[in-house]
Image (cartoon, rainbow, N blue to C red; front, side, top):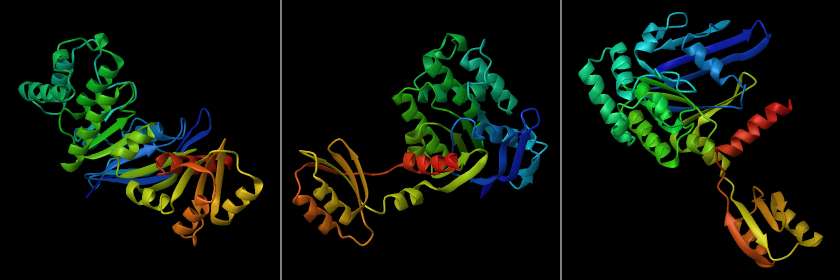
Length: 310
């Protein structure tokens, strides 16, 4: 079931005459975890603001649960948890529990329900002892976790998180990853912007890449990585610098040949058999050989780099 549908939205800021978003379309289904990636200034934040009706699009429409909410986001906000970059969904002078009671109340939770849900979330992240500490007295990472808890307090159908791992240590990031997976399994749709590609690869099932306001790549994480790793890539270290003749021999079997000192990255040609590559390497002074698994960073560099060169 489609929760959020973004249809051909565009936005140009009149003051700067910069086109921040150009004809962007995508969907977030129930149970999806969608990673929305791109360099700084690519259009991610403007897209989120258009979805949340903080910025009006020049054209295009936003639908939530089949209803047009382009110019009226009340229905969306009642069913959505939001964390914008900088933990802007909290009152900093209040404690976590006071924030939970207030924001839970805004979403229809009783004080008792909000406190119970807040304690469950704090316990999950190991911050139960901070429930009555002022937000201003917490570390940057703790503040980020409380912001995420505020977004999750009313068990939303859609969760929008802008740079959720900012300031989190490895343990807190892993706890959040597990929490997002549980929410996804329960049918919550999740849209995340992040610069941490390893986190995106681990948690997301779909990837969107935006650059210069345009969506340049959209696919499932699983399918894109399977295609990327269809050919086996070796990273080979040699005991000495190879001669020109030996390098020429490598090029017979390998279409990709990148060298760093005495280490080469080799990618076999399409019709080359693995046994042929290994036989060829057995005749060279190999001291170490490893297979290379490529990740989202390769996709990011390819599409963002190519687009920046245009």
